[in-house]
Each structure stands twice: as C-alpha cells, then as structure tokens.
Length: 101
Image (cartoon, rainbow, N blue to C red; front, side, top):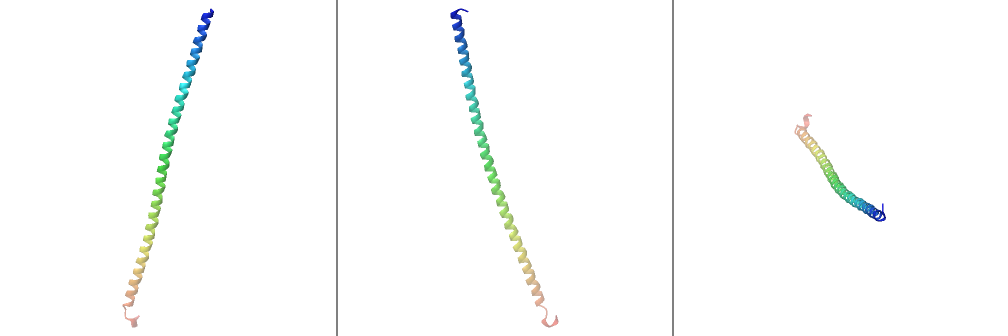
C-alpha cells in the first residue's frame, strides 16, 4: 500500500469504528428506554395489585362485621324467643287454680 492508500484505509477503519460506536450507543439508549418502559409497566401493575389487595381487605372486613352483627342479632332473637317462651309458660302455669296444684 502506498501512503495515500494507507491513509484512506485508516480513515475507512476509523469511520467504521465510529459507526460501530454510534450503533452501540444507539442500541444502549434503546435498551435503556425499554427498561424504563418496563419499570413503568411493573410499577403500574404493582399499584393495581395493591389497590385490588386493599379492596379485598376492605370487603373481607365488611363481611366480618356483617357476620358478627348477624350472629349478635341471632343470639338476641334466640334470647328474646326464650324469654317469650318462659313468659308464656309462666302465664299458662299461673292460669291454673292456685289450690289444685
């Protein structure tokens, strides 16, 4: 190779190396953009999951409160029925003549 050919060859090699570096930098930026997008999607999904989880906890607490309230109401109704039955039995027992027991 002559001097001019060597200079031209060196310039081509330098241009190719620069193009490779630019391509690598472009791919790196694209990869970083994809990573940022992925992280945003993950954050969105995590937020949605946490909202669903909170809603489920709220519903579970609501069901628990309703169950406790219904149990208390049933207990009270049973107590009142027992009291009514006792009063009715006493009333039937008191209607008999007092001297003939």
